[in-house]
Amino acid sequence: MNTVFFGNLAVLTLRKPAEAARQLLALKPGREVLWLAFFLAVVLNCLVQLGIDLFVSVPDIDAPDSETLTETESIPLVLLKSAGAMMLSIVAFLFVGRLLGGTATFDDMMVLTIWLQFLQIAALLITLVLSITFPFLMLLLLMATAVLSLYITLHFLNEAHQFGSLGKSFAVILLSALVAVPFVLMLTPSGPV
Image (cartoon, rainbow, N blue to C red; front, side):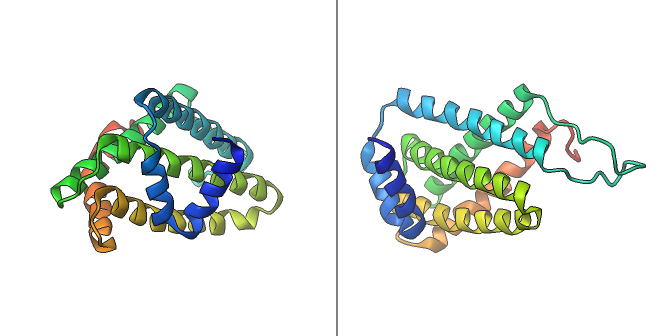
């Protein structure tokens, strides 16, 4: 595998996500490779999030003056949140999918989630670079990334669980969100709970 393979796979994921999912599932990487890729994705996600925090200023509504600097979260906290969110989505997609009759394994969900995470990191990096030059594009690019991620996730879940129905995949996403949201709110120190 080389950069050409991953580039072609990224294009295939955007054009035909179901076919890309089948290719990813056929790779069958070992557990060591999966965990290494998982932690690499966590670190890269942390770096991009910190880059966004540092380079894209968001006005603080509560601040008395608009010239206050935005606080960035500590690196260990961002790493922990990123790892927790990724693992929570893997486990939720796996178990909710199985409850709905799916057949995916933990490794299947891990491969697909990690690949999607790498694509999202690339999209966020592009968004960051373009937002520094053209700040008005940030919201549009983030919305496009979210919609595209949902589309790809639907196909990935359908292939991993062998549903034969994007409707079941959508149900997995909705039910997983219902399961995950209380945990995310409980584990977020600055959250509303």
